[in-house]
Amino acid sequence: MAGPGGPSRFKMLPDPPVAGQAVEVTYSGPAKYIEYQIDGQAAVRIQPGPDGKFRIDPVPSGDELMLSDNLGLPGYLYREIVQTH
Amino acid sequence: MSLAKVLPITVALAAVVPLTGQSRAEVIPNGFANHDGATLSDFPFGAYDTRRQLIVAGSELGPSRNRDLVGMQFRRNAGGDTSPLDGGRVRLRVTLSSSPLTASQACESFAANRGSDATVVFDGVIDLPATPAPTSDPAPWVEPFAVTIPFQTAFRLASSALCIETETSPYTDPLTGTTDEPWWPVDATIERTPDDVTNLGASCWTENPSPMPACVVPDTFTLGGRGVFTLTGPTQPRPAVCMVGLSGSEFLGLTLPFDLGFFGAPGCSLQIAPFLQIPAPLARTPAGPRTEAHAELPIPNDANLTSLPLFAQWMVFVPGNNLLGTQWSNGVSIRIDPTNRDIRYTWIEAPDLVSGIGHVFRGRSPVIRILDN
Image 1 (cartoon, rainbow over the protein chains, first blue to last red):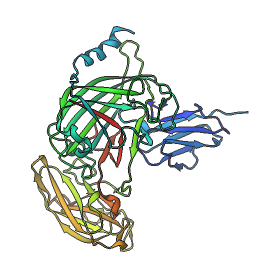
Image 2 (image 1 turned 90 degrees about the vertical axis):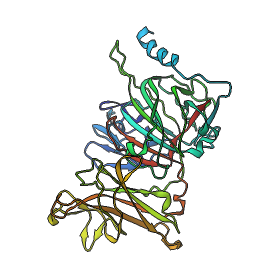
Image 3 (image 1 turned 180 degrees about the vertical axis):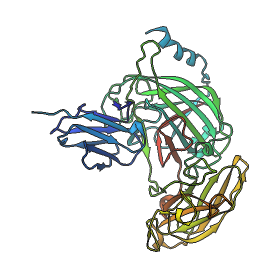
Image 4 (image 1 turned 120 degrees about the horizontal axis):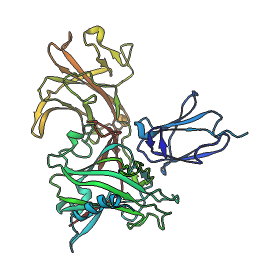
């Protein structure tokens, strides 16, 4: 699972995410909170469960989904959102 | 598989410390040998440049603390996680040392946490196997559900805390130029910790390369205890004062942080609202070429103080450095809490291999099976 420069702490299913559908994310880093953001919209703060998992349901419409744990490059990931028609 | 792929691992295995007939193992944190740690971690197999330290109380090692440590194992995450894991390789260096600090005292500085007997026990490539869903919960301590790091040099602990330092970086195949991207989270645990230890801003202290030289010793901030604030510095002893307060947001109507440039200390900020000043000079330490200061604050044994946040910031006197003749540390805050006791492990992490400081995560640890002779 690659961030903008290689592997990251996030694993996403499905990958890439699909607008209007749920995406399950697994986070393997030490941060208590992570943030996700769609394009330029306000960031949403989430606390992953003890198993590192959280869901975005549904994935909003937009061009890109960004995930960040604010701990550096390994904790930063973006994916283009697949649009459904 | 090409010889170039096989050879680095073969060389590493040929140089490992052999296990003897008296070999045994200890799992840290204690209690997780046969219980899942309830969370997962990329420590140490995340395939990106990361430096980490895990400071572990020596008591966690049990009999292993008086024996030669010869290897360690990590098991895959289970706990209901049935997803297969993606194999691949990572480069890993492991350094063990006898930390001069306890797990509670450990702070952002890698050098301060590391002992003078630091020994590189492994330096090579780790082959992470593609792993199916675990067959048990927790996952068993056998391949492909566990990975063994055999030490090339044995290590024996000489103090009350073990510092396990890892430097992980991606592996690139020298023939194809392809970089492996394994996904191999290991079993990990979180115990109840004082997660209200917060860093406020950064230091403006130009003599000191650390942007966060001020810290706290969390397990001293209990009812009836003596809370300890610490400051680390470069080689030159200096007079210093620890300012303590009850707010990090406002002081005499001023919003914090407050820029002290107007008062002759450009680049410096007041991070807290001080109501108490504790003189505590920076003095040289026997451990090495740096200075330390400790300020103690008696805490009454009054249950009404539970969860009360305390804030602190250090002012260091450096004559001639600016109009005020002072430099200022980062601020720190911590809550008084009885559960601050007994921090057995602390994890420090930087997202590269060159930083001298990292983020601190108290009470978090991967589950590690330490092998000894």
